[in-house]
Amino acid sequence: MAQRVAVSDGANKKVSRVRVAVRLRPYMGTQDEKDEGSCVRGLDSKNLEIINWRNATETVKYSFDVFHGEQTTQQEVFLSVKPILPHILTGQNASVFAYGPTGAGKTHTMMGSSNQPGVIPRAVREVFKMVNAKNEDEGWDYSISMSYLEIYNEKVLDLLLPGSQDLPIREDKDKNILIPGLTHTTITSFSDFDKHFVPASLNRTTASTKINQRSSRSHAVLLLKTGKLYLIDLAGSEDNRRTGNQGIRLKESGAINLSLFTLSKVVDSLNSSTAVRVPYRDSKLTRLLQDSLGGSAHSVMITNIAPEYKFYFDTFGALNFASKSKLIVNKPFICETVAVPALPVKRARDGQEAGRSGTEPQKKRKRDQKKTEQDGSPISAHLHSPSEPSMMDRLLALEKLLINCSEKDKPGMDDSRKEILNKAMLYNRVLGEGSGVKQESAFKNSLAPLQRKQSTASKGIKQQAVCSSHFRSLQSSKNSPSTHQEKKLSNQVEPPEGKENFIEKGWESQLDTSVLDISKHKILQILNSGSLKELKGLQLIGDKKAKLILGWREIHGQFKKLDDLIKVEGMTGKRYSSFMKANILSVMGN
Image (tube, rainbow, N blue to C red; front, side, top):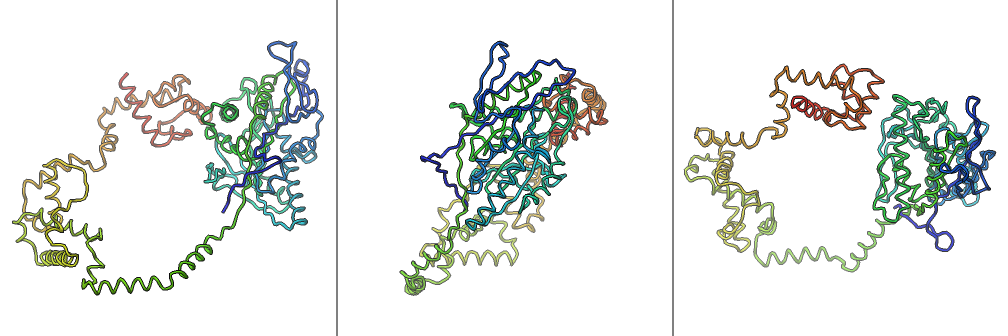
């Protein structure tokens, strides 16, 4: 059984603040740009300052856990991450993620290159180093597995299994975040890790923009399980006026910026004393980072910033976000798997009870049997007592059925039905005698099962229907008017498929064919040539859906028929039907 054990660090300290490191990449000015110098500079190993955009003669100062300047090496950046790694060998969670605008060097910090490996390969190598040392010194047996995924356009995709579908993010009863269906590959060494990680990294979605030749179009998450170690390379926030994104790049940028905006809302909510809800579920990214921010992990955030003036507002926003993030407090716990001997304990308890009582169950059965013989009541009366609900309910229903049938129908019963009736009455009389209750009192005050009240007319019809189900041969010989009336009422009251489905299927058939074709043509014309505003003017089409339609049109061209609208992301068959009905009726109304 897995259980949580609170972490006690020092003087009963059970919390862990998010550590924030800021890395300034080197200046990369080009010849066609004005050499305006750097807008930000470091003061010491923890402090930096940036030009105040309101007053260029002033600066705004920030203080963080660590500041890495332009000449910082990859190893020095890793040293700011290394202190949280031993926690995963004690059953705790740890998280490292890189944040910042596009082109600020996040992927270089996390991935690095063959000559300058980044945080991810260095952290994995360090974990194996610690595991080997534990195995030699303490004889522990550790199992390490890896998973690698990306969040692309709000879809969770398995990078170890190319072509996989969108995976859900779930939470178990212990509030742990998990992803059903995600590939977990066991690794035994760093070379084993590298063999899986390098090909999987090539599956990550990247593209070229005006600012970055190899821009990450998704958030990448590497999960290493001993405890749980999240190593996350976030996609950068983008200003589409400078990146020149269009079409599918614009859609990707929108999904990235939306998830990062939700991330900032989560940080604001965690720092607010009046927040009622933390919006983790508003995006896949924040759902996955729930442990890292305000959750159960020891977390380090590496904020990457750029010194050029064209990145000024991106850098200024990233520093403000990092400053708020360092105030977040996590509550780590140790996830232990405790073997609870549930079955042995239960058997021991049963054994103790058996020891106290001896052969009590057997004595009790003999005592009950003896009492039965003394009472002189038949065994069948005990096996089928009137208190048995299933038997009594059936007898009550049968007697009520017989009472409701008219006397004139009784002579028409065949011999087999008479025999069943006689047996039922005889059985009822035996039960009454065995329990010491008269036959009349057994059914005198009995009530029918609780049912919905009906009018007198419909009640009579329903009783007649019950009788006809048991005496079908008699009813078939009588072609009474009441039978036709019953069928007519049942057809009016309960349509075969329900009222909604009946109306829903027949609405198009009630319209004139020419008018219907004209309405569909107008809707198709708006879908193919309408602007964003005109698309939003359609019924059931909001801003998001209108942008998706524009994006689909740019990639695939015009809609050849209205049914092609189902191919747009998020447009299911049911939504398409509602869309068509609402817009056709709207066009006809105009």
